[in-house]
Length: 250
Ligand code: PEP
Image 1: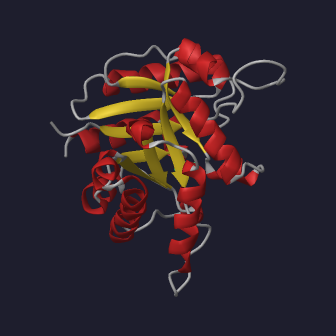
Image 2 (image 1 turned 90 degrees about the vertical axis):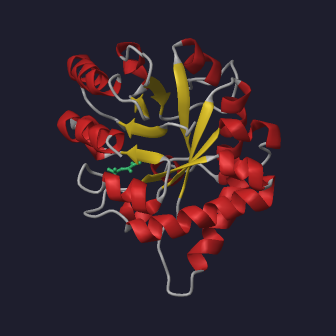
């Protein structure tokens, strides 16, 4: 049976009230639970996690995690804590966190923490810019290899890769499906060289960067990805639910 598509919504540091967070979660849930082909993942700020009442096809995700397990780390939240509140997926290495100083080494340690807790990692990777010579491919490859660091072959089943070229995040337009397809294949090749073909093919590749209901279906179908990581549109319930309907209709 084909694996379900993953449509993950990264709410970032939004919304500002529990009332609105609750409204978004319940409105999305109504559509998500009816879908047959999607696991919808809602990634709210930690403080709103309890408002997301998970169900079949409707999972809770986190936007970040500590690389530490417990102890004197003020302000941090561990992978075990996330698991204990029902989190199933954890976004690691989002471009906005890398911008705040998260290195590939930190990302790789966070992946270790998430995998150790038995959760699924959504590893974000993506080049800052594209050049004519294709140097961005080397950049991407180095980032993937360094971020995966010590991830063992046996843990690859807990890995999902979200390809998010930085120049498409929060941008007016998304990447073309043709370019998504080409880069998705490249990422699979890097994974295959690292873990072997069979393991690489089991990793789901998502695309993220200015996804809306207008481009979602083409990106998934023509771009041949296994789902989407949605930023801004994830808190626009009308737009996000239309994305779910478009993908479920594939
Ligand atoms: C993101 O932040 O992961 C993202 C893809 O943002 P947006 O959809 O707003 O471009």
